[in-house]
Length: 90
Image 1 (tube, rainbow, N blue to C red):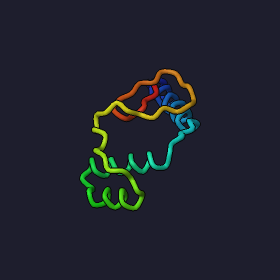
Image 2: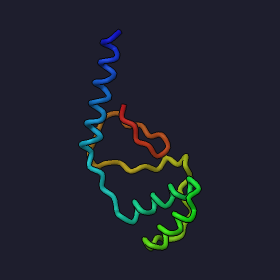
Image 3: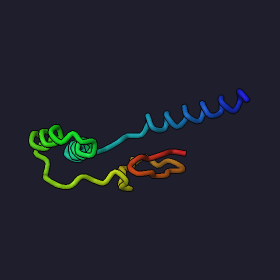
Image 4: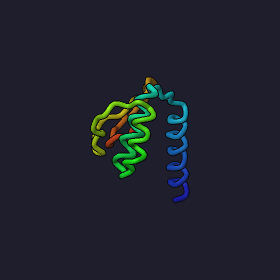
């Protein structure tokens, strides 16, 4: 039974290593817009408005929480599965 838990832990370590080595490339405005959308979706309207004003973000509706949009890394990897906005490695 201990071997099963050890294998699961090794799998988690391998996945964490893949994630740690994945270079994420993004445009600063896109990141700020994503943060803005997150603030709006979590009811932090005043913070979202302040970020929008200070960062010069355009006015638009946030992406729905169940959207399948995600950002992929340029590094190819095996077994990718998307769930909402999360990228899961299996």
